Length: 237
Image (cartoon, rainbow, N blue to C red; front, side, top):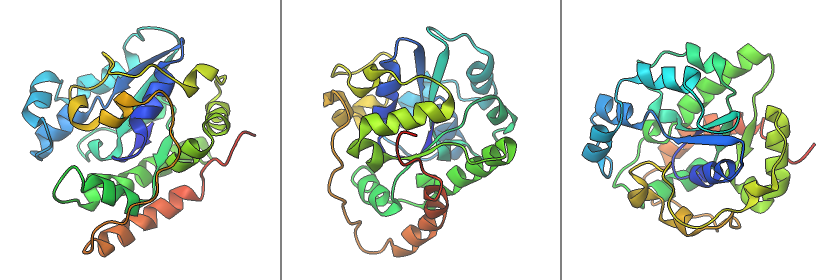
């Protein structure tokens, strides 16, 4: 699942982890991304010290490693972690799905956590590049799902997503116990407060306007977002 930041990506991971047939992994390329870019994120040094920061063994584990339980390996990825140095061939060995959100909302939410934001920080350009590769290989659009659509009608949208990737829908995806998981990244205490308190998908929150000065960034991001949104799933088939 390829998402940008400040979407419902962790809630989606919760939904899949609540299936008995699924193992999840939380942003496995995050350590590599932080070490390679030198960018300052909350808990950066702790994350780099704890994670494998060479993308090659990470990708090997993602594509050939054993799955702890069940038959589905749900990988929560941030698109901006897929830096140009990372090989792309492994993308052809997984089912690629795309979780999107309006860039204006992403920017407004992101700025609540960090002082500044760039197009590279929100990853929507990289999301479109990954989408194009997957579409070329498949000969059709891979699944795209909008966070607000899931929040508005979780069952219908999760049914549609499951159908699109060829697995059965499980009602267990609709709710989960509150709290932190062993599978959460060690950065959870910086970012996951809301999802740790949750027991399911909440309704869409009112859209927040970003502060002035980010119009050019949002316009650039919307170019890719609109392309992706044109392919979004709209409900159970």
